[in-house]
Each structure stands twice: as C-alpha cells, then as structure tokens.
Image (cartoon, rainbow, N blue to C red; front, top):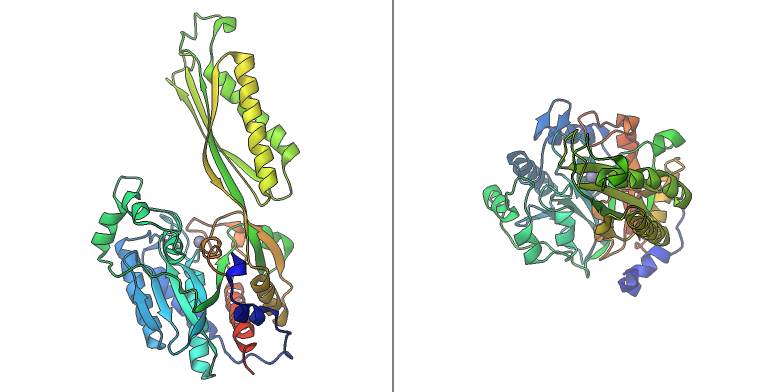
Length: 430
Ligand SMILES: [Zn+2]
C-alpha cells in the first residue's frame, strides 16, 4: 500500500533533515483548551460527553466545527455520513490531520475530540503564521468511529472502503437503520473520498486509553501498529436433564464442557502469548439456564489481539484443537465459529519517525507502542501513509466520564503534532 506513494512524495520522507529551525507556528494553549471545552459542551454528560454518531449533539457539534474551519479560511465540506472536511485552499498537495468527534454513550471528553481540536488548532496556527506552504494542512472529523451504526464508518468511507450496501445494511443495536439516522440528521452531500493525488499522508493524535505511557513515565507514545483481532464463539451442545435425579456419569452437560474450555484458555494462552497479547472471555451463556436443569447448550465469546499474525494463527489453531479434543472427551458437539479476523497492521514508518523526531525536538523522548484498539488511522493507512501518536490517559481510563488527560500533556501533544506537520511541510521548502 505504501508503494503506491508517488516518487515525489517518497522523496519528501527521505530528504535529509535540514538544520533544526525554530518553530514557525505557535500553538495557542488557552485557545486549544477552550475549543476542547466548547466541543465537550455538545452532549455534555456529567464530567463526560454523550455524543453518539448522528445524535442531535453530534449534528450540532459538526455545525460548530464547520464554522471554526471556515473562519480560518479552509474550504469546508460535509458528506451524507456527517464527515467534516476542511481543505487548505490553493494547494495541489496537503497533509491530512484529524480524528473522530463522535463518542460512545456516556463517554469521555477527549476520545477522538482531542485529535479533531488538535487538527483545528494546528491548521489555524499555520494559517496565522502567514508562511507560504507548498503542502497545505487539511482537517477531518470522522463520523461514527465508535460504531454506533458501523465501526470506523467515516474513515472507511474516506478511504473508499465502504460500499452503498454497507451503508444500507448498517443499523444500531436497537434496530434503527443508518439510512434513517442520515435522514434525521439531515446530512447530505456526496461521500468525501480521500484525494490520493492531493494527500501526502495522514496524522492522528489521540489519548492512549490505557496505562502504558503513565507506567513508563512518558508523555508521547508513537504508535508502531494496530493489533489484529480474532473473535469467536465456542459452543457446546448437550442434553437438558433433571439436575437432582440424573447421575453425574450420565449427564451430557454442555456447561461443564464450556467451563473446561474457559479454564484452559488462560493456561494455554499464557504459553502462546507475547508481551502485548491480550485475551478476553466477554460473555458466557448457559441454556435453558436454571439451577435445577443440566445445561443443554453453552456458549462463550472469546476475543484475542496481538500485533503478530503468526501468533494469532497459532492461538486460533490451539482453540480449534482444544474444541476437537473436548468433543472427543465428552461426546458433546463442540464447535468454534470465528466471527472476526482483523489482521494486524503497521503505521507508516517514515511518518512515525517524523512524529518521534518532532517529540524529540520538543525535548520529549517518545515511547514506541502498538495500539490494542482500532483507530481511524488504521483504516486511512490502507489508502495512504498514516501514523498516530498518543498522550497519557489519567489512570488509563477511557470510554467513561472519568476519562481525562493533564492539561499540560494535552498541550504538549498538540505542539508535537504541529512540529511534525512543520517538519513534513517545511522539508519541501527550497
Ligand atoms: Zn477514539
């Protein structure tokens, strides 16, 4: 995918570094924080934000953002999904920066929103600097990254990875169709698709949503890649019997089989895992589900993530082998239904290096880390060079109203992004 970058663009990344010049753009800290606080007013819920995609708060927040982007002279577009795009005028090429502005229900004020306001502030600072730039700075606020209707909806559309059928079939957990949500939101306009002739790459700033930066005492985490994910449901079929009268040796107990599988997971995965492997049994169901009935059906939902495709394959094989073994031992039907296979991806190493050097320019030694969560950057990276960085989340908390980041860390992250943009666009200057 990166081979598709034109030679002219490649030379941009490979050009030897010029002498470090002082920053030409100035991030205005108070304005940055004030805009973040203003955005958090849309859908404010206690100390957090409830601004799910296509809600009235989401629609209003996008109108507000369009005004801010228009004020700084960007050409503002919005498509029928709600994606907001501010294009730098009068340039043939641009670097795209941004994130998503939708939230999970009763979520935090920074997840996604921070990266959007970073993009606004960085573009604004470059507009104010009055410096002629050969490469502009485009700003995007993606829609429905959180998957109220379809996970990573906006970035998939921008990357050209979304079909009309995908839009037609998507619906919320309560059944409401995405197409109805679009109609009620009043969004219109053709899909905004990334212009590959224009865009040289994508950068996203985001909160970490985990504890690793804090634990390491670092302020900036440069994302090396995104973990791949496997999700599967493991089912056992037995027979319902009276739990008081059926001897233990005569039972066809689906529950017992599934619990044996569950206790095997921890020990087997501990052997197979690497430093960043994570796994979770997120649900367990027994049917019919009564204390005096032997379970006839049992089901577990298992998920695991890792950055190494080979390891994911080995873990999945082990699951299949264990299920086959359980079937032989118990005589019950034990099956594995793999519902999700998302391969691990890496960020663009040149762009990631620019982010790391931008942090170093500001005196911060960045941490390199893989992301266990999916992000818009992962999708955009399928169509152009893309990289991402994190700032620390207090207590590692996210997807909750307690989500927060120290103000000085928020400001530092924005300065790192501005510096990275500056390095990338100024290297083209003669
Ligand atoms: Zn996010």
